[in-house]
Image 1 (cartoon, rainbow, N blue to C red):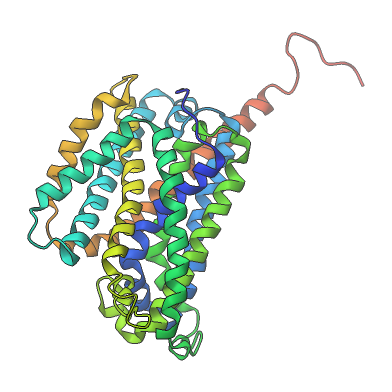
Image 2 (image 1 turned 30 degrees about the vertical axis):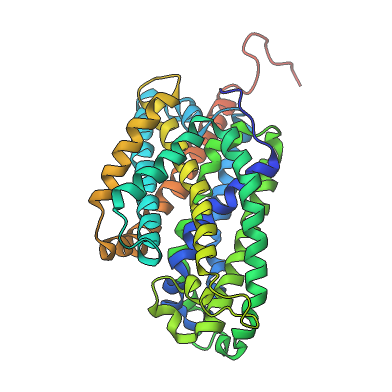
Length: 374
């Protein structure tokens, strides 16, 4: 196990952008498509997958302290099934890195840099992420201490200055069509909430592992509050237009104007979102390197950073159809996330519990010492 450590404060700050940075980009439009004015309520049932991941993975971490999910999987299911798991998780995190990089490229080129070659944007951004990954999880944690509080403060300030453009009646009536549309709208964001699965790799780096569960719960509550705030504000400002826009949250920034003094804050928002996705992409690249390192039995994940960046850039260049990407995010990603982030750790927990119970029942007393008569 690496000697690198992160504090509880850093873990909390890492998890917030890991979920929010891509979720708030396009998910509000998807939620509004299914639940209309009740889209903000869909955040609550969508968080079930997040709590599910947290409770299962922290329970496993208590049984196997200082081990990642891959490391204790070999103790639970054996060497060869774990090797298959390593390759599977490598593929999953490679997909994450490629899709997240494409989301960044697509947003930036649509909004600000239409004439900049995609290869330049993808390559430079991934190289910057690779540099911080080379510094280790401690380096990513320190970056989050600088970036994330600033982003959170601006998010709440932006919400306040956007209130004059909001119409609360657009959030009414509440649950006009019952709870069914809300549940349908919750399916897509549940995939993002399930990404708390990454604590299965991060908890061993925590300086106080016993605080892992409470810190993760605080992080998911923060995500819920911010997501509900952003979704309700988006619907209150845009109304029925929310479901028709690719980036509704960005659109409401273009409405901001205070006495003709504060205007054109959209470029500033693009910058803030970019540093948020920088944290998320750095974490995903770090986890990808860790998984690939385990696949090849290496001890140094840093040797894989540059080759994986190259492969990710190639993968991003291949994924050029925005329609297919949106279909992936709506129809494939949520279910793939449930399998990987929820069912997989749950299966490990169940198998481990069965093995522990069987071992306990098989040896009810010390065989070297005869039982005492009653």
